[in-house]
Image (cartoon, rainbow, N blue to C red):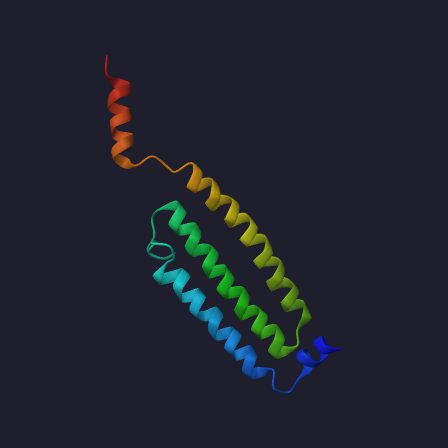
Length: 120
């Protein structure tokens, strides 16, 4: 009953717009500004920073999807956005944890290893 009231309320466009604005802020931060010291999805070259930006970007897009689903009363859009959010958060969280535990060797370290491997 309460959920039905929230979904069909005539004032739902205001909170839905606020939710979409939060989603757009997360989207912009994930794409251009980054998180946890990264430079954002568009400018990042490191795998760990790229995945962090990707996760934030997907979360922002899904919040925009939730807001649109609420405003348009589209249950299918809510289900799709929730499914994408859940799957991507799980997948990127696992990948980020693996990248934190086993970081890629730096270029200096890789060059030194090549020199050592070719030494007689």
